[in-house]
Amino acid sequence: MSRPVKDYRSRTKVAVRMVMNGILDVKEAEQVLIIFVWIRMAWHNEFLLWNATDFCGLERIYIDKQSLWKPDVLIEETLDKNKAPTGPYLQIKNDGWVSITENNVVISACRMDVYRFPFDIQSCNISFKSIMYRYTEIESLFTHNNTLIMKRNTKMIRTQFEWWFLNMSAINETDRDGFTRIVYTITMKRRPALYIVNFLLPVLFFLCLDLASLLISDTSGEKLSYKITVLLAVTLMQILLNEILPSSDNIPLICKEALRLTLIRPSYLLYMTKNSSN
Ligand SMILES: *[C@@H]1O[C@H](CO)[C@@H](O)[C@H](O)[C@H]1NC(C)=O
Ligand SMILES: *[C@@H]1O[C@H](CO)[C@@H](O)[C@H](O)[C@H]1NC(C)=O
Ligand SMILES: *[C@@H]1O[C@H](CO)[C@@H](O)[C@H](O)[C@H]1NC(C)=O
Image (cartoon, rainbow, N blue to C red; front, side):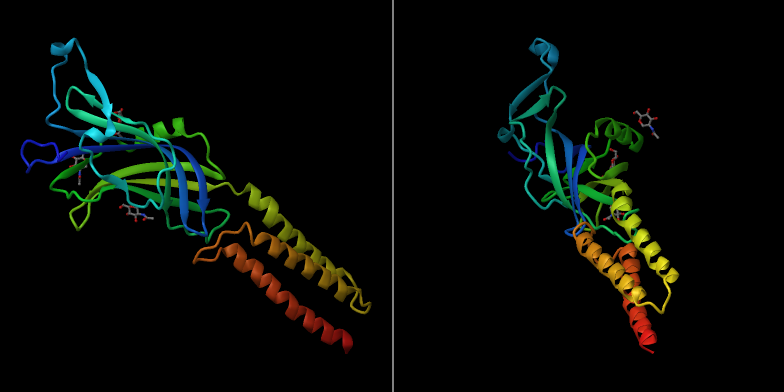
């Protein structure tokens, strides 16, 4: 039940591999990324070695997960328990490598910047780190190169929500406190089509309507009521859009511009009313 090394000064090698199966949800308001991943964690146990030829060629066995020491490697950014079902067994190979494979729904914290919404690119970190063991006890191995990680991921990914999966890379690093971690960085790009149809085009359309009011003569009272109708339409649309727009500490550029349009319009109206009453 304790760290399986013959000399306590030697480090236990731990390797973690993650492959992403899908992006399930991105909540910009809560700064949360939900992904479905396949995780394989393997570590070396110095006491579980055997010669396959001495045991009729038996190379691997499967035993209950609870019966052996496991590295306490967890995802640092995770906010909630894994909701995907996990298997009850771990695998032991005759060269001493013990491994667990599980599917995982990772609900992770991720800082997102939506300034360029809906043309934004987000990158999120998933870091695997031991809670208790330090660098002197656990060595995070990183055996994949990034081309291989990318190849596997593009093959495995099945659902991407409203995002395009762009890239995934990994590094292993040791921080100042002496903890070692493997950091996967996922980069993805939003599919803007929905927002162009639902948001950008209507705004442009209202802008054209607004300009069309220049064609109406000032003397007939028509112009003012026309302008007010357009203003009401824009306000209504903004109320509806409040739902779909992301919120974060950085307000999207597009919202700032829309706000500017609505702010300018009433002052313009006021100016017009004064002029027509004259
Ligand atoms: C992700 O991890 C890398 C490496 O540790 C770091 O340089 C980068 O700032 C991290 N990104 C975020 C968004 O935390
Ligand atoms: C990163 O992984 C490589 C290859 O497995 C290993 O040699 C190296 O010691 C690791 N670095 C850290 C800081 O753990
Ligand atoms: C990555 O690993 C694969 C297979 O192990 C190898 O064929 C390829 O050359 C490696 N690429 C780089 C950039 O190291």
